[in-house]
Length: 108
Image (tube, rainbow, N blue to C red; front, side):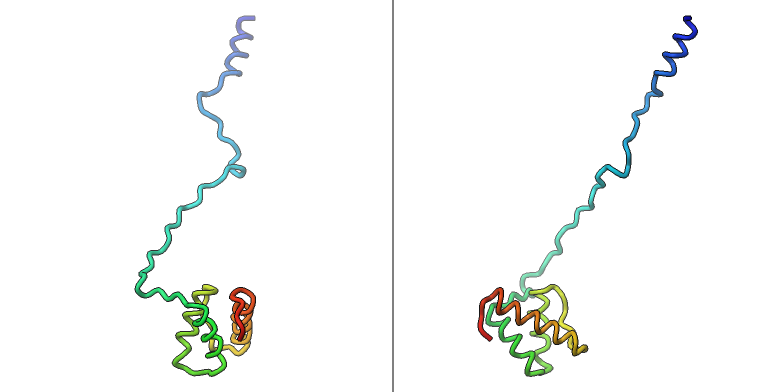
């Protein structure tokens, strides 16, 4: 009987290690992303009039205004204006126009 009790006690004893839980249900740590350091001298923040002017200049197709239009569009939508594709130009111009009318509540 003593032998049976010893065997039962040893089978119940743990090996001293903690059991780990399921790895799939634990939340994984997300890496910390630091914001980019922005040089305020070169940062372009367009006014509502600049945004309206950029939309008007889209119709003029002047090459020296493309950088201005691109800066305004990049600030608003965080992507570059694609001047090489007519379909992209139409879609992006429509997006800019809707922003001016719906968000800024300005007349064009």
